[in-house]
Amino acid sequence: MLLWVVLLVVAIGAVACKRNESGQLPAASGEAIKADKQAITGFALARAYPDQTSDGLSLALEFSRPLVGTQDFDALVRFEEKVGTGDSSWTLSEDGKTLRYPYVEAAKDYTVLVDANLLAADGSRLGKPLKQKVYTGELKPVAGFASQGSVLPARESRGLPVVSVNVPEVDVEFLRVREKSLPAFFQQFQRGGRRGSWDLESEYSGKQPLSKLADPVYVNRFILGGKQNERVLTYLPTQDIKELQEPGLYFAVMKRAGSFENEFDTAFFTVSDIGLHTRAYKDKLFVHTASLQSGEALKNVELRILDAKGELFLKGATDGNGNALLNYTLDAGHVLTARSKTDISLLPFNQPALDLSEFAVAGRQGAWFDVFAWAGRDL
Image (cartoon, rainbow, N blue to C red; front, side, top):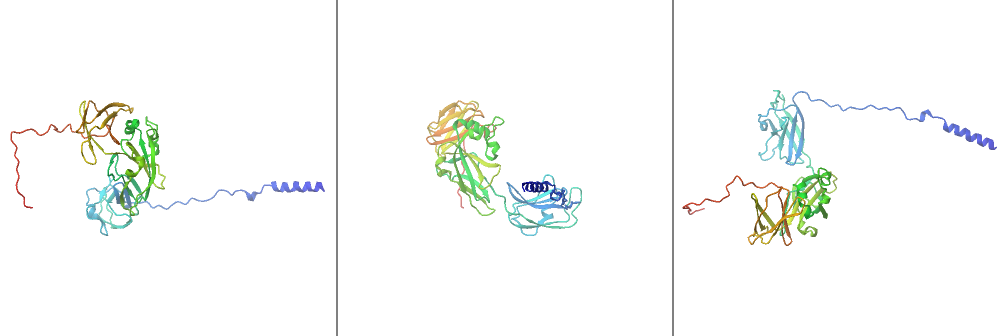
């Protein structure tokens, strides 16, 4: 009996191990389907589309051949409906193939009428009039800081301005730049704008990561609001945030809530009541300080010039008229700081200055007589 059981198991195993040709994967098959794209022949309209840039929304017409630039495009390319106030006009791109009409409305249908006599650079004409409908669509969501290097008044400030379109909320992180790192910071970040994470944390080309120059002090989500496709100016209430009241330079990094883009919008600013005015001479530096709130001169303001390593290079103070004349030769790698009580203002010398060397600044020359003329007025 045991022998029969063993033989039965062996037989079943042999059947199970037998190759089943019908159970193998079939041969690869399938035929790629190519889209039937009709090539444009001759002179024709290739496409019409909405073109959104930082300057606004335009309607673009792209042709298959360059156009003659001396044509009256406003007469040859018209709209079926009334568009704008008459201030806008068609402009031709550098390659001569694309016409753009600026300042059109978002989420709106336009009907463009192109005259048959529109002339290409090779002498060919359209030959027949065209009627093309274009839907501009919704504006792309965008948010950015309205100013860079701002000095926000410590008294009665509205906050940090942000411009947005179709962005309901933003996430903003604020970092405070260490005082010793100010020269290095201004050397790397001379202006704000869009920056990638690789730029903020790069250690290449002699740069220092932002984390080694500044400390994070506050992060929050802010509601911007605004109607659909409407450009909105919102002020982030930095004056009400306790963590941003300490004097110094702050760096703000902003992104749209729920977005995971590789770039962030950035800006740096200070919160201070000290307004700084400087005039650089050959080996002297004149400094004037005044209150941003009242305009009055500020006396006994501590002035410090930091070198490229963040070390103290020169110090001084303003007199009763808010003025100081320092024995100093301008160096683009240095930074001037002005401190009074809880206020501090900064002025990096690597920023473009107003050049007055070509102007006569000696004052009005004296004359042996002056004429003052006046008359009554009946308005």
